[in-house]
Image 1 (cartoon, one colour):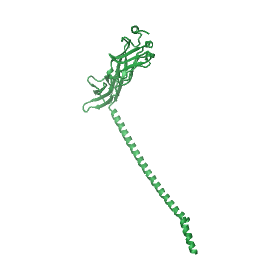
Image 2 (cartoon, helix red, strand yellow; image 1 turned 30 degrees about the horizontal axis):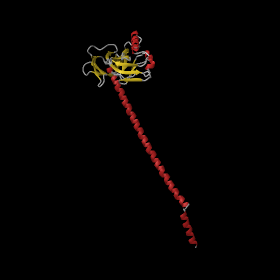
Image 3 (tube, rainbow, N blue to C red; image 1 turned 90 degrees about the horizontal axis):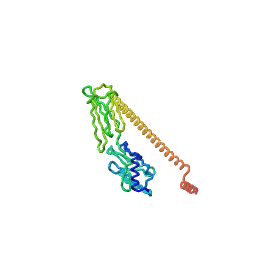
Length: 311
């Protein structure tokens, strides 16, 4: 079993020769609120015993793990950061973060192997970049009350980092200088951003205008387009048609309910009438039965009366 000095020398030699995987810094993209793996592979860990590692964010230790000769693993971490339980068997000592946030943007994570003499050697270094998608932009078009200018308002929310806004007229030309004013505001209690861009331009009513929100970090672009001044009335007519349809449907359903209730009342009346008729027939039948077949007391009374008469 190599001593502390041997482990330190071996680790240093491997790093000098460039054998340590992921030694060179590389950036990983993390999406806000989602888990992420920061890769690091060190096959030489398979032959190590009593080895300890540390993952650090800049200078802060976020995870410390130690593998003992008997197979026990001691692990301590911040915010549920972890490495694979089979790291010693696979050499995969990538760091898993359950979620990332904008404050982690442009931070460096480094993995160090710790010798028994508390010496450390850097094995991997990974830079972390953070991003979040912006919502699909809402584009509103308003004709100016006075003059020939048209106003456009483009709004998108919940993204990171600050995006680029691009306006296009008829998908070809950009607005004149000074026609666009854009404001970026932070979302309360987060480090995400909302963006609102205002365009004032002199165009004809059938001109199309597009607003694009470009998140360069994610290589993602979302675009909304207003196709002429008649696109808003189309939405209005569609809404009116939907209102008419829903009203007509409500009327039909109401009529069907009324008919159903009326029919049920009719059935109840028929049922009650038949029940009364049945009860009447039963009572009438019982009377006829009594006339044809008198009961025992009546028979005895008639017999007694006849005997007295005979005497």
